Length: 283
Ligand SMILES: O=C(O)CCC(=O)C(=O)O
Image 1 (tube, rainbow, N blue to C red):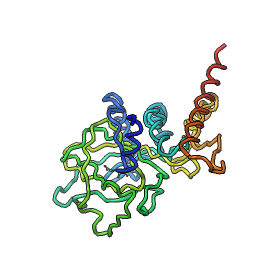
Image 2: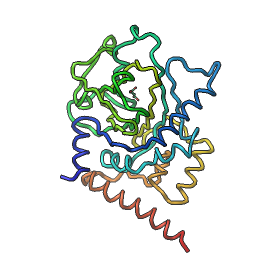
Image 3: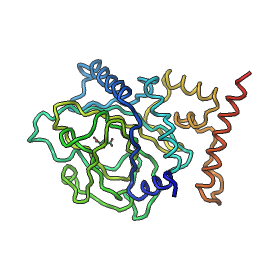
């Protein structure tokens, strides 16, 4: 079995996979500085209280964020999971300051499944969305690991509200290194952990969904519109889909052949469309 096939198989089984060292320290410094900059301009009535969440990050910082959204290492894996149908649902930078009162803090930040999920049925279903989360520092017991319940994207594990901030008997703690990316299935139950270090806990979440769904961020601003124009000029279908423009609509094929076989053809067609365009541009 190839390494790629093994990754996809474990993703389907566990509900997540980790891509190591996707971003380097220089990029991490840039991401952290961007959060700090946004915090410093959001004062007064715009001030956020216990944690900072900045959405629409592609419009706010396109040069920094477009390579993150359009990262081929991540997109190649997601295309193996849901096919060449990937859209950016939202891109968020977040920072959690140290807990003010250590003793009062819950054990767990809050169990949940992600946007566009549903209660699993006992069999694997392809996700409608995947979260690509990157922590901007190594995770530790002090700043709080990511907690997940493996296979909860398949098993219909339910949880009462009063248990959302308690340890789960089947949980696994994940101590990602700064710059690693974890790709989760949106049906996977997970939670952060309160930050008991004395430094901020930063992360970046690139949330992708299927390109025929709505998207949460808006791509109508001048920066995203410029990215769309550039993608059109390159005939870059993958980039256009990311930004809500599904040019090659493949949603009504009759569905009489295995999806994976179709996906391989479409991925190749998209690659050729891009390549033909770049060859035509050279005179
Ligand atoms: O704080 C964390 O580590 C988890 C973040 C999270 O749950 C999410 O992005 O959905």
